[in-house]
Length: 291
Ligand SMILES: C[S@@+](CC[C@H](N)C(=O)[O-])C[C@H]1O[C@@H](n2cnc3c(N)ncnc32)[C@H](O)[C@@H]1O
Image 1 (cartoon, rainbow, N blue to C red):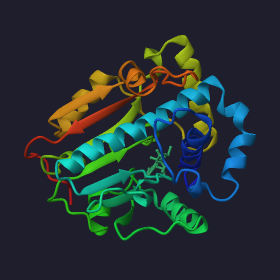
Image 2 (image 1 turned 90 degrees about the vertical axis):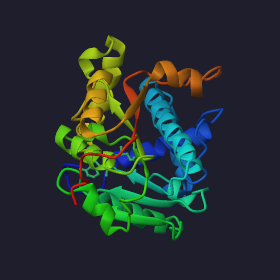
Image 3 (image 1 turned 90 degrees about the horizontal axis):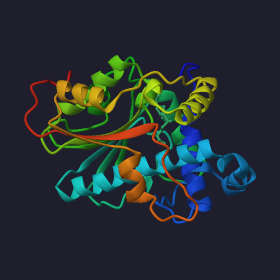
């Protein structure tokens, strides 16, 4: 987000979710809005790009993009069954959940950099996708604004529990911005939780993983969105506990590949560069949300 315009990586990962709908079988993350949101001709553009989309690095990335959305929405469904009625999509990009929300009483809050959010709303309008009354928008730059103020302005109720997804975003932020946002979420009432992904530090990766990491990091940097923050599972668990979360479940390729990609003929699966953390608020937080 250095250039000041909308996120180009948001468009790239939306393209991967759309490609998953038409190139991969079986689909592990079914998203009927993934293609429509990209406008007319999206399928033809994906078909024309198939050689790149079938390369090993892009397949690893596509698997991690669809697995993180699947995991987040599965975890959201459990939270809704437990009574949560607010869903926050931090750094929403072209995430389509709000436009296919199956939960009747669930309010969805899309939070994103104002430039990306304005572009998304134009993109939705151009694709003829009408935002339902259940979605609200909050423009927030995680580096300069507080998520607490942005969400409050959009009508979010900080006194009620919420489930939060923060997918494909932490890697682009400074450590301070990540911890400030996590601290705000940890101040929500018990029953709240967050799912987010993070990348492992390159020096902890194998040679093959490091090459894929470098190819993806180089591409993001040329899009004006350099990768900034990396964590080990131990370090993120320490940080999550320090900002006030009660429990943390941390999973990677070893758990996600058998869960979502077992027995496939096409071999699609995660490469082990990124991991998912699910942190839950289990009791009253000692930390105020910073309003
Ligand atoms: C790779 S996209 C992921 C989008 C979406 N979560 C998904 O999975 O499709 C990165 C997202 O992070 C957002 N982002 C990056 N830096 C940000 C910042 N400083 N403040 C707010 N949003 C930011 C971008 O606007 C973009 O929507």
